[in-house]
Image (cartoon, rainbow, N blue to C red; front, side, top):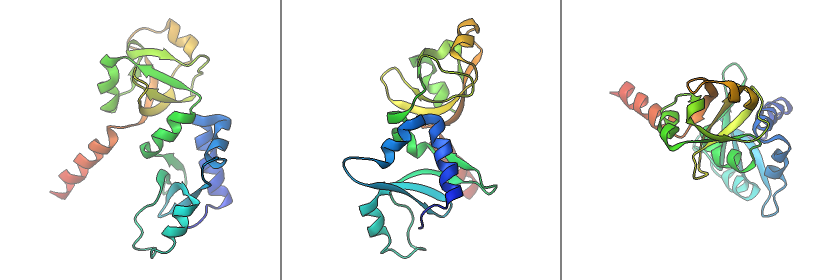
Length: 184
């Protein structure tokens, strides 16, 4: 476990800023307790400083995780946000999309969102903007990227893609299924 390098910090903050914009400051400037980002085995964790101090007492090879996993660095050096950070993304996201009940399961099975499945958007969402996807009860289901701007969505047909799925809550179950099938 170590602090992020300048390049790693830049990559993480650039990726998070796509979802949160300037709200990313709220992650670090918290009134309740000081939090920070740390790297452990190519994964970035967000945790209170108090917890990080306690985690330093555990030998590096025995430490599995601590805090909330923000994402991981790929072998090519890119940063990918994980679905485990969804609650924080949901709290501070600038772009949001709410799904109708009829398209929730489709999204949770890893499919992209079509216009007919959208209940509403945040105003002014543009093409390629990162958004958090919610159900109609305001529960975050995952996140993705707008395939069209809100203006283009108004002219799109009901089967046209509007949000490209990047991660959803169903990923964990799908990945566990492939891991257990490979182990058999």
